[in-house]
Amino acid sequence: MSPDLFIRQSLGLNLFFLRIMKEHAFFLAAGFLSKDAALAEQALQFNTSFNALLADAVALANGNVDFTVLNSGEVVTNMTLRAEQRTQQLSGVPIDTALTNQELKLVPAGENVNPAIMENVRSLNQRAIALTRDLVGFKTQILDGMLSCRLFTFNFPLLIIHIRREAILFIEQLESLQKTGAIDYAREILAQKIFWDRQMAEHAQFISHLLDPTEAALINQANDFAQLFFNLRAQAESGARPFDQLLQEEIIATNNLRNFKATAEELILACRVRSIIIPLLADHVLREANHFLRILQTPGSPIAIASPLRLGQICSHSLFRR
Image (cartoon, one colour):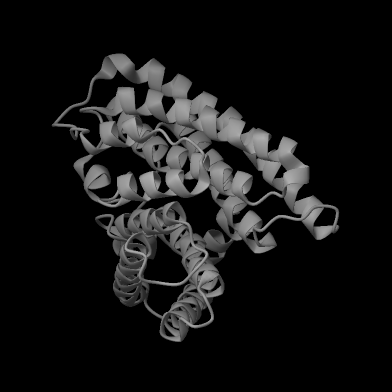
């Protein structure tokens, strides 16, 4: 186990996913009716708990996270602060914008990280695993209530499935780090690609369905992106095309989707598009596209996938069983 790699990857993963999880909790809270105030309060408690964990991660991260992570736009974007401020105004729910300002000032790691923080990082990982498991249970409770028509929320059932899937991935990656000390992103690139292809396709579907029906051009663009990423996922699963060729197409598609999401967020913040997309959700899906794009551009990805793993082995990966 390399303490350096363990610390860098753990903190990078936590900076990305803890913010994603705390926002999932916010979106859940915003979707409940007044009769389900207890569920909304439970969701907001998750939001508070994840915010506290994220604050711990930020405190450990300065000088201990790779430049590629901090520069990717997956931790925060240049619009995150504005999206939080506007969402706070619209919802009345307090958002810790001071933490966002701290993240914007994070300094990347140099040649070495601080090995003295290794046990603190290991503890952070374990606490994140435990809290995220509880959140998965809460999401499952909500989904079961919706599918049995015992609970109404303004969130789509697919959105609950979608965000639960991401929480499970976060747990699995943290557990891998705790066990082996590192995640081999190059070796897992195809499994990661197929996982995030579906997430990107579903993002496009959500955008399409949350836009006002009068926004025909944006709806059509979103639908086209959804179809594109479902097709890319199917091609990767079939193994019919050389992976390096497919990877280049994927990078172009993800970059285009990222730009579409960025433009959509700018329009939402400027009140120039009709939708029921809250600004923080627009920033949220943009960060996930940035995260996926960084993974796709991991050095050596096509080479690493070519020989060590057969497609059958890859398709048995836990990411495919969701």
